[in-house]
Image (cartoon, rainbow, N blue to C red):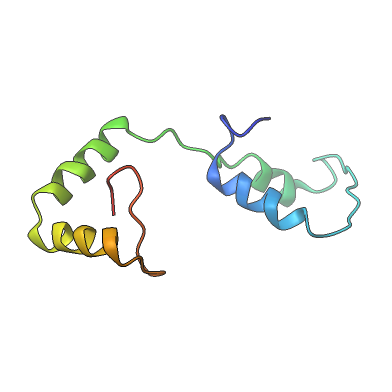
Length: 87
């Protein structure tokens, strides 16, 4: 697993666990069927590539968001982040 193909949910868990000492034990799914069912739930979903593009287009036509982006260029704020031209 590398940072290019890890989903954000798993990355968050990895970062959380790096601060703790722990041991993992394996138990067969036949003994813990309720846990086995949880492990099979799909964690990562492939996002629609157009979502980012549509978000950017929507923000480029919104006067309030354009104003916030301009303000953030000179006065950074902890509550807002512009990344990839998306607020």
